[in-house]
Image (tube, rainbow, N blue to C red; front, side, top):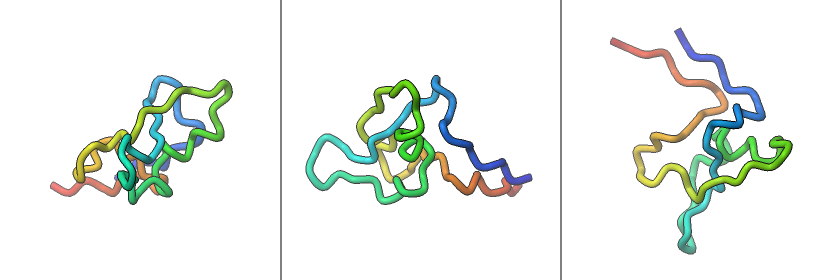
Length: 73
């Protein structure tokens, strides 16, 4: 069964993401579809985000706005 898409803002205990790393050009190509990035304007009060949560191409911290696909066994 497909998981439901996240609603914004995401829970306060979930890490936020700036969608950019510490170095010039280190930007996330999936930030426009990630709840960790898109929640920032919705947080009241503001919650300090981390620099680029997905530090590798595995994108393990990515929270897709469309929800996660169904698991296949």
